[in-house]
Length: 607
Image (cartoon, rainbow, N blue to C red; front, side, top):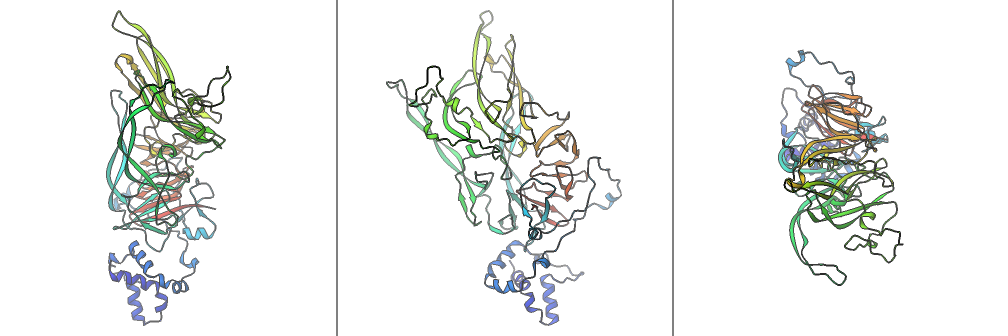
């Protein structure tokens, strides 16, 4: 960093104290610090402010804090209302081309005004992650330092899920792959702002305050929150898992214990959150198996929270599972239950058959309490709109003729499959999502709902009801001579919207469901995107070049001219289509980039 750069910042802060100096000296200094300019002389790029200069100036000027406060300008003069809109950019020869008329459902462009966040706070507004409504506004976050001028300064490693599809009906496979991509100079993570200063990453709070230098290779965004709603980061590590290998002899009661065990080293993660001081990463007690909200993405704090007084409880357990091929094995899993009363889990003990061990003897006509009856779900998510998504072990059977020709015998197969179900607040299963079809020719067909294919924002709309609908993945597959050859062919694998009673929303023919949130479907067909509400009306016609899911009542999309903007659930533009890039909203904050104006940070606010 050049000494002249630091000197310039010090000079700006002390400008009121040197106004009485000679006019010539004042003119030279004013030009040097950027207050005056000469149109025919190009200012060196290195004189532009950046975050490193700002931080060093703040650090070195702590002793002068009192004198600076005396010379500080009034707040109303320092933060005027900004009514400018970044201009549209186009090539000269493009201006002569006829413009496409907007679709009937597309609102006309309008001039939008944005005040500074500080000025809006003075009027009683607060930054919020609550869904956008008629009382919401966007403000511009303006700080003493400048936002970057360039879109990117560096590269980063990004991990994504890659799905492979097969033409022969084989089940889709998924793997996590690492990609090297451009790092936007301004990134958002659950309300935090990650500022790339071309040399150093900084973590900035939602109010624009610089918190700490940040190493995203050491503390990696986890795209999940703990039970207190705090954004989490993680470090990669390893752990040893012990498992049994040799079963001992039976004792007097007929029970057996494992005599020998072994262990395996596996990859693991340790989770952290940023302490209130904004400087220290504290280790979290977050358990990803039990505390996750189903999907991993930059979601607001309220996403996946319980909408009823029913609380989830779980027990670690081991089950005997028989699969479709008739193979039996032990599976370590969890059993879940919902309860309005606080449960003392240490009072639940079960024998090897899963029967509860208790001093209370059941009546002759009573069934004994079992682990599966008391904790019936292998996974359970929080209630939304009075319904919950659970996974259950479903026992069913089928018969097939097996054996060589002329010697075939009928054999019954008992099967346990883990499947998704929807339950109400009393635990009643709302509809049976499995359908089985059998024939005398050893042919079977099945249809069932399955877990989402992706675990990120690509599956938004899964697990939780939203405006009366939930996104579910439905699979149908043929099993021909499955008992003999294990042949299984996936026929269809698609996402649908269902009501709590299993009725499906009629998605327009030919369109793929990309996401569902805030009561809006994001649909795609032949590379064009559109937004449809649950009344079946297009709020933005399917002619967009790109579309992102709705979050917090707003969505980012790209119009036919190739510019990004932000719309509300009525399809109205609330940030104009004047940007080459706009981030998804992150706990009320949006970052937008234009080649003309550089980066702008918007914040959603309401009173």
